[in-house]
Image (cartoon, rainbow, N blue to C red; front, side, top):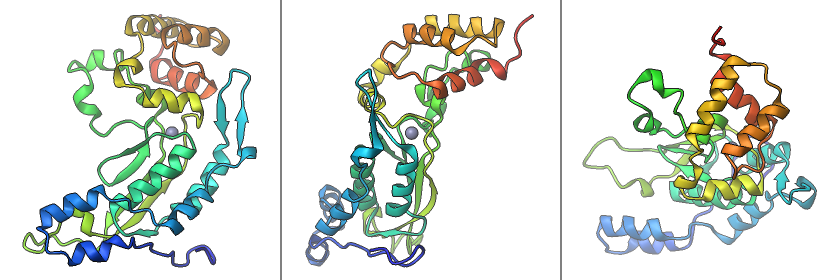
Length: 262
Ligand SMILES: [Zn+2]
């Protein structure tokens, strides 16, 4: 329901909500029940579908990958998930985001009042890095840190009671989108999507090989991308879609901020 930008958006209230709220269930059971529900009303589903990529917005590469147009994504994300839009629960926003982002080949991550992209650095990254700060940069294995994808939808709970006697489980609060960044530095492609869905184990690059490349980059910081690409492919073989952005990020992570050793 869009009249002009910055007008109010329809809040879609699922029909089950009244019944559930009027039931005599314990609040903990109610919470469990509501977390399992499908919060997408038919109107909301229609709206999400209207924001799916069109055929023209998906290009097919000769390697059999399908890449979605980033500008088209940004325009549609701004339509569906604008700053200030209200959803009836965080679960509803979660389900809207999942349906929308899946269509754009983005694997949604939801944590700490934030919807982000799989290729964003995790908030709990701290516990995974090396204890020794000298080794930390060298052995960072995560593709998340290579892409540092900035996409995010942040939200806040509305009329949230801090008073413990009045506090309800989070599912009972409406939420409002409080911050957005529609940019992606990852690729909105089928290959990236598939890789992000794989189990963590397969996402770990071969570290010994990567360290060799990092060593090489330190010695030859201007190594040409067409030489760097096959080396990276060798050690990150499941990344068939290593593109210029990846190479640039890789180079920045490992060489430009470290002057070459002379
Ligand atoms: Zn991304």
